[in-house]
Amino acid sequence: MDILFRERSTPAQNQPTASESASKCSETDDEYKTYIEKHVCLVARHMRISQAAVNLGSHHRTKERDEEKWQCDQEMAQVFAQHADRDLFQSLPGAGPVLAPRLLAALGSERERFARAANLQCLSAIAPVTKQSGGKCHVHRRYLGPNFLKQSFHEYAQESILHSRWAAAYYGQQRKKGCGHHTSVRALAYKWQRILWRCWQSRTPYQEEIYEAALRKSRSPLVPLLDQIELGKSPVKTRTKKS
Image (cartoon, rainbow, N blue to C red; front, side, top):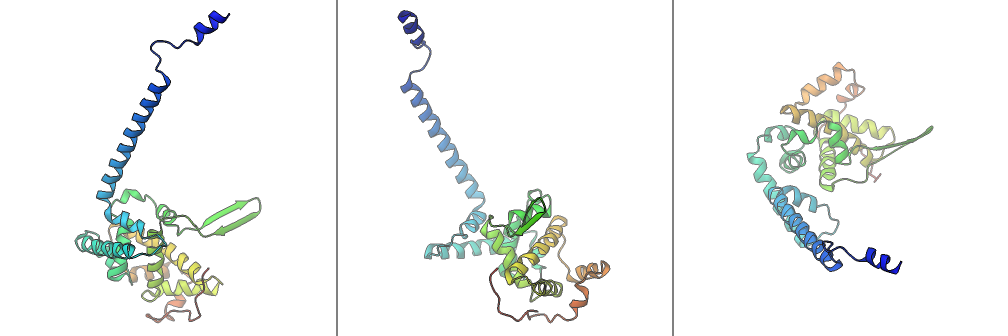
């Protein structure tokens, strides 16, 4: 039995030893790491603006981060000035020379990236999360998402309150329902994303008159509030609180 056991436990001649296996695994790991590094460099080279934008999400503000932000803004401004979709994003009320390039950088030029508006709303963490179990339902804001996307749409929605009558009316409506400032702005950003996505897909500049006409046709509850809005002033004059 000892002889049989020893024969069975003897490794085959073609079977690699432990050292050889470890050496091959090490070579494979090195090749994989090299491949990943090359791939990352290639992607970073072609997506410098997006990569820099993502890096801006860090909460640790340093001099290097401020310089990187300035360079990112400069690059986006140069690309925006020559981009085919420039007129589309410039047509957004309140976007201006700062937010228009950021929104363009957020969406990009590849229309197939977002087959539906919901894809953009979820990726940017603007869409809320609904949890339902049995007879209970809980809705809360989405926490995970690229900071650049979330911040860009949130800031634009907030700025649009001073430049769009229906946006101001909708924001005021949400505040009257008891929603906080940021919750109301996120709800407005959610609506703006649907509008922007449609314009982006059809390559059509936004027109405030057409959207207000659509609201009147659908008998939206916002219509009676439009004439009460004074552009340049917030419909709610209370102190904003985080929510």
